[in-house]
Amino acid sequence: MNLENMDDGDVLQALGDLSEGSANIYLWHVSGFRAWLAEHSLTLLDVTKSVVRTYCEKMKKNRHWSVSTINTALAALTRFFDGLIESGLMDENPSRGALGDKRVRRSSSRAPKRLPVILFEEEERRFLEITQVLGIDPPLPFQTLRARQIARLLYFTGLREHEAIQLRVSDLYLDSDAPALRVIGKGNREREVPLGPVIQQELLLFLEAREAFLRAQKRCAIPPTLVFCDAMGGAFSRGGVYYIVSTIFADLDLVKRSKGPHVLRHTFATRQFRAGVPAAVVKTWLGHSTLAVTLSVYEHVAEASGSVRPV
Image (cartoon, rainbow, N blue to C red):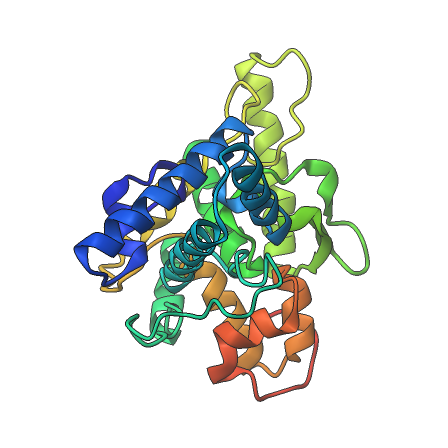
C-alpha cells in the first residue's frame, strides 16, 4: 500500500472488517475526502485536525450535511487513519478530536493493535552490509550510491520518506561540533535531528560525489538545492524512495507485513529506546506532535532512559 496511489481496494484494506453496507458508506466518505484534498492541492500527509475540521464545516455549509452525516464521515476517516497507522504509513490520527467530539472511538471490530514492523539485530547488520557506501573500491556508480545513501539516511535519522526527499543541502550542518540536520515536518513543525559520526562522514563524501556527478551532467542551469536530486536537479518521488527500500528488503529476503521506508523509521526509534534515550527526546527527533503519539506506537520499548546521543 502506498499513500500516493491508493485505490479503492487499499482504502477498504485500511478500513478493516466491515459489513458490506458499512464498507460502501465509509469508502464513499473517504473517497470524497480524498477528492476534496486533491481539489485543494493537499495530500494525506498534509492532513491535520484543522484540515478535517475545515472539511466537515465546508460539507455542512455547502452540501447541507446533517450532524448525523458529519459524524458518519468523521467515523469513516477515524477508522481509515487508524488503518494507515497500523500499516505504518502514518504516525497519528488527525481526525481524532478534530471536532472536539470524544464520542468517536476505535471500533471494537478492528484487529488488536500490532507492534511496529522493525528490522531485528541480525537484519540490521545485513542491511548495513548490503547498503555499505564507504571504503568501496572501485567507487559505486552515483545512482547506486544515491539509492543506498537515501536508505541509510532513513535508518540513521528516522526521517519520513517525504522529509528525506525534501532535504536541502543548506539543511545539513555537517561541519559543526554537533552535526545535525534541520527538518520541516508534518504540521510545518521544524526540528533538528543530531547525526552520529557514521552518517556524518557518509553525507560529507556523498555531497562530494553529488557535486562531481552534477558537474559532469551539465544539465542544471542553477545549482540544485536538494540533497537527493536527479541529473536535472529535480526531486525524487515518494514512490521512488519506496521502490529503493523495498528492493533492498527484497535482496535481504525479509519476510514482513510491511517493506517500505517506515520500517527504517520504526527501527530507528526502537533502537533509540533500547539504547536508553528518553521518550521525550525520541519524540522530538521523530517530529511527533505529542509524547502520547510516540508512546502509543513504541510503548513496548519506552521504559528505559539515559543518553541522548542517537545510535
